[in-house]
Length: 515
Image 1 (spheres, rainbow, N blue to C red):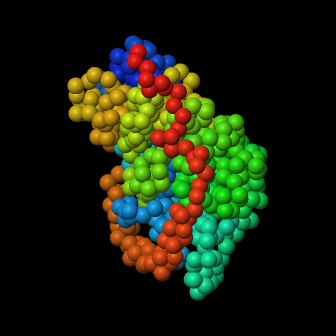
Image 2 (image 1 turned 90 degrees about the vertical axis):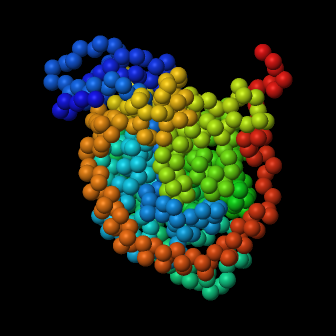
């Protein structure tokens, strides 16, 4: 593959183009781009004067994947945890005694861990839900945005917001946590709500995604971690500025119990009653929904972000994909963070979305196909986060796409490009990545940053801060037995029997039909 100098105009020549998940591959196809937007897709396009040229012979070009949810503050936790459910695991990621604050440079390097992996595994757009507690340094917040700007990714970046104590967002805390430990936790300063709202408004005004490739998304952490009035204020801010919103919802069985005990209804019903749900909102996880929850989400126009692999690793359950989809709810895909999933590889997430939804209790016509899973990670992600011009290779769409080497073993022999991409490719074949009309990877090498220098700096920083991470994690052991008692007590509580699972969701397929 040969490349000329990059200008505002770019033409990609002679590729095998898969324009979307439901399209047929087109041989010997050219893609013409002007100022980040695709203007033509056809064979034998003329090369305009002053246009950069990429010879894509031997490449499969597809829309870039969209990772709808992860947490870059977990990147240094990769590989540290196993066999912990969410409500126990989270205390290691957000320990009661926080480690010393990172510098902006360390935050920048931490962010780059995931940014590099994203590009190398075919992702062009990421949604990063970043915890900056308890310090909320604007310099560190800016460092996250700067990392994505520098490497060339498209991104939505949040500051994860909660105005209630994180450690109290579970039932039975006062009953099960010993008084001396409660006092130790309660002695910590509460999040400064006014400051958080000021930060949110500042980012809404200065980092709006309509004007910036790396933009801001409003992100209350979860209903149980935010007061009612705080949720209302954040929804109001998002509406005023027309910003996307995301929050975690009903990820675990414990959270289903929490909704009943905290609000005497499901958390979805609680959000609907607040007027929080709308087509600007992306709901993360949604594993423990009732049919009524699904109806409320569908009526609001909100999207659901499916995190199949992190939900599996944390033992949270499996989302009822078909029931949610059948109600007309838009579905997108996400990896979740390196603390829970250990990898941001969206190719493995797309594969899991298809393979985990092939059940012996449903007819094969009802299973999720490779094509559908790929659509979740492209068009579904674009719709979830309000970017209508993403997810396809077509005139008028943003020029975000990936080129895979067709001589890689995942595509040899070539029978069905999309299925082989979903079921066989790992990222090893990624050769070209274009974001906003700029080739951020060419010939398998990142173009906007020095990858090797970044990796060396990341490893150096990790070595420096690892003792502090370990010391902070050690403080969790004092509290963990009591959180385990809370967890076990919640497991003993009954939940709504109507809650959907992949095995009890309604199926429109007649299992007895023979044709």
